[in-house]
Image (tube, rainbow, N blue to C red; front, top):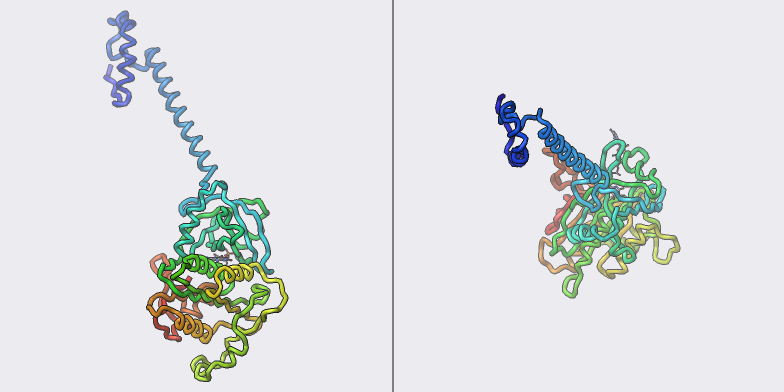
Length: 384
Ligand SMILES: Cc1cc2nc3c(=O)[nH]c(=O)nc-3n(C[C@H](O)[C@H](O)[C@H](O)COP(=O)(O)OP(=O)(O)OC[C@H]3O[C@@H](n4cnc5c(N)ncnc54)[C@H](O)[C@@H]3O)c2cc1C
């Protein structure tokens, strides 16, 4: 008989079984050559083989069950690699076009808080929601925790319903209690620690990252540092920002020197007195969030509302005014001022030029649009 080739892994077992076979082998020594002692044909080695196979199979089945259980259970903590299954807790309409979504992670043990906290400390961040039927994902921006939800494991989002959009339509169709697959966080823009002033030019749901910027920047307030944020928020309809009040007044617009009008051309930036202080209208949820931020950090937050249907648009003049106001109250040290632009593609393009795609990546592209025309010095510009 040919000698059997055995893997080293089996050798010790074979030696053990060989020892236990000494007695019977001797009985059949002449009719049974030594090599046959380990032959699968012998009853004892058949038993060994069965045992080995059972052990391997059991280990394999056990491993497979654990793997499928893990896969089913999924991740319980928000992470950028695997989707985590959150639960839709509530969806409140903000206007006819958008809603406030609140989602909860699978475990409420606080394991997510450190992850959120690191993102909040860094700057503007987003997460991706998956549409499971089509296997596509879209990015959404968590709203800052309010004083009521501080330390809460839930995340909140302001999501516009695009009647022809795949994921936003899917999200608006979900029932309360449904599962939403979420991956992240992804840092969209870091806000450097030394930043003194942020001017945030937001269009529509671009207000969500503006609120994030406010949260990150203003929580750095201390006795020495009093950073400031000025938000310019444009919406198509009044209902999207109902209750929003501008600090500036018509009078302020009127006292503008005539040389400014020459620089800025004839199109008026009428953001003024859309809703005057004292008007009694119920504010939209997002306006209430803005008011909360303002109340928390008095004199560090200003907001101007612009509404397309009321023919008020963010123009060069509004941005210019903000920069001049910021420069007059800043420390005078350069490179501490940031202009952030967020909103639909066309909005970003008009304000600061389009972002571009190269080598499979989205890049900032050159500064263009009305912000370039202002030729601002000492202002870094970032398109979101
Ligand atoms: C970093 C980041 C953060 C964001 N945060 C938010 C947020 O907080 N809230 C929010 O509401 N949005 C946010 N967005 C936008 C969001 O990711 C989605 O783009 C948005 O919800 C639309 O996705 P959708 O799948 O519903 O629409 P899509 O299916 O992508 O369609 C978008 C629009 O394009 C049109 N369209 C699609 N395909 C074609 C085609 N072939 N030809 C012509 N038109 C077409 C559709 O009709 C629709 O009007 C964010 C985006 C980014 C990048």
